[in-house]
Image (cartoon, rainbow, N blue to C red):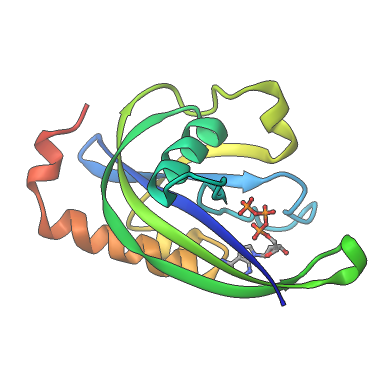
Amino acid sequence: MTREFSAGGVVVRQMRGRWWLTAIEPAGRSPSGKKTIWALPKGLVDEGERPEQTALREVREETGVEATLVGKLGDIKYVYTRSWAGGERVFKVVSFYLLRYVSGKLGEIAPEMRIEVGRVEWIPLEDAPRQLAYKGEREMAAKALEYVTRNPELKSLEN
Ligand code: ATP
C-alpha cells in the first residue's frame, strides 16, 4: 500500500479569557447545505524536512499565522482511497504538534492556497473535540486542551 507522511498543528491562543485553536475548512470537502467540515492545518512532509518544521510551515501557508513549537501531541493513522490514480489505497500517518500562536492574522493566505483552504477560523479549544470532523484530530485537540489546562504558565506567554 502507498504510504504518506504528513504533519500538522494544533495552534492555540488565549483570547478573551478562553483558549482557541485554528481550524480550516478543506476546500470542496464540506457538502453544500451540510455541516462545515473543520480540520486541522497539515500537509505532506517534504524531503529533508523535519515534521515539526512541516507543521509550522503548513500552519503559516494554510492559516496565515506564525506559531512556535510547544511539543508533540501524537500521531494519527488512517487509510483512504484516492479519487485519482486509479483509486489507490493510501496508508497515512500524520504527526501533530502543539503550537502556540505568535503573530499574524488568520486567513491572510496566498491566493493559490484557496484551492486547498476554504474558511479559516479560531474555534474555542473546549468545543474542538466536538467540532472537528475526524476522530484522530478530535483526540489531538483533547490532548491540547489537557496540556493548556495543566500548564497555565503558557497563558502568560501569550501575544
Ligand atoms: P495533506 O493535508 O496531508 O496534504 P490531503 O489534503 O491530500 O493531505 P487528506 O487530508 O489526508 O489529504 O485527505 C484524504 C482523504 O482522507 C479525504 O477523503 C479525507 O476526508 C480523509 N481524511 C482526512 N483526514 C482524515 C482523518 N484524520 N481521519 C480519517 N480520514 C481522513
